[in-house]
Image 1 (spheres, rainbow, N blue to C red):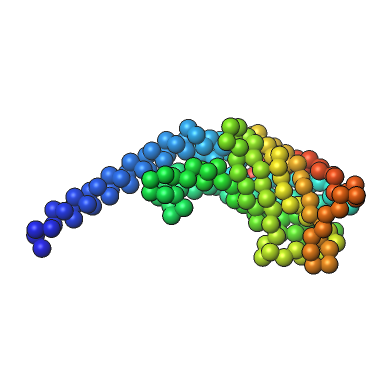
Image 2 (cartoon, rainbow, N blue to C red; image 1 turned 30 degrees about the vertical axis):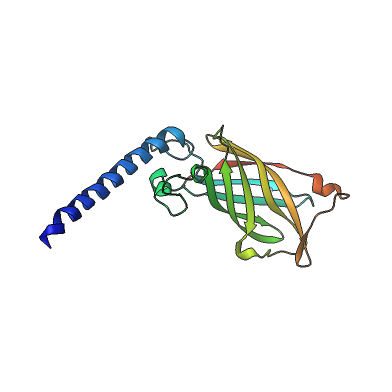
Length: 194
């Protein structure tokens, strides 16, 4: 037993050193290359958080959206995750956004799971996809938010250019001859205090 004791101790020290280096390198990476999500300043205005705004859908229905962008995992968590290769970390995971959204109107409540990506060159730009929670739309004959190809944020304001799907009789529909499908309103949201 004593013959292998020093090897175990050395392995434990090496694991601890790798963990410490990964943690501090990850923190440096987050603070310098992911300023949209991380800051040493507790008062910094970051993209993750709760946002709220209203828009009118292509049928003229006024809707209120509440959107929450979740804080992303730290760089160290991404580097140590199973999604990153041991030899080649997946840097696109560093720009990934996840969250949830709710849209309320006289028609009812629409609940969404939200995923997206921060732009590689400008971290104030992003795109989002909205998927119904549970994979099912709750309101028939309704325009649902589907995509945001042009999203931007600065300080306490966010703007989303909305793209819709129309849900009818158990499926989504799109009609190029229908001018409602060409409408892409810009939704302005404001940051909500936590």
